[in-house]
Length: 272
Ligand SMILES: [Zn+2]
Image (cartoon, rainbow, N blue to C red; front, side, top):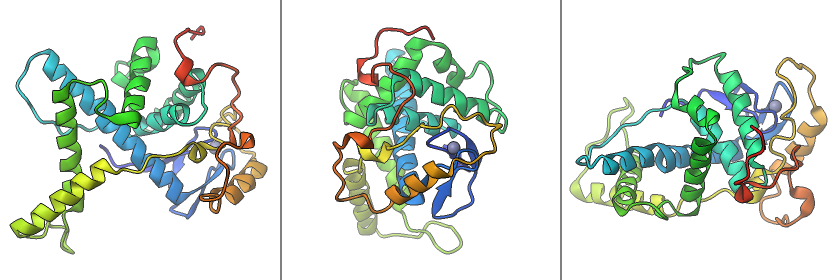
């Protein structure tokens, strides 16, 4: 996938340049998030959309067309990763189907100011078709539940191999000049083992990671006023809450601006 160079605000869905600070603060709405949480969510989302959606679709097409196994090196715009964060905020957090869609539309409207997203791109198609959009959400949810669940065993096998290969490449040590180190067979075996462990033990985000998401979704991009109250509230909560906070605490639920049912109950269309 293409390297991610922009930051997405988890509250107003604004996109902005990365200032590489520990606390990421949105210049539009003032929403703040700790970098480690941001990176953890982005990393999980990029797996979910990469392997759980793009690779899965590609391998499902292969099986459908009864092609022999072809391996891919898929690339996709970072907007897909942001869209997957929005999807996960409904699958794991409390965002409704329509709120997720609203967030993704807003991200797209900002993204097209910086990158070209053709009108006939798959990304646009999922936004224009309820069926495709539901499939997108379903695949992300399947990945989050169990990437092998409900999918053809050959597709599942291909996904496991892709993810292991990805981790294997990531874990392979490099020299200072960026070239991969020469390794013994035993060292390669050890890296391979580690890659399998990483694939099978990836940490999933929890409900509290999505606390306060999209509260400022109605902030227009033109607004320069910073909502510092939200920022400081979030900043205080972001770091030390990890172990002790009661995750069932009602006040921890993000206040979404729609009263529509949560994503799991979707099915009825609500005039899109
Ligand atoms: Zn914002």
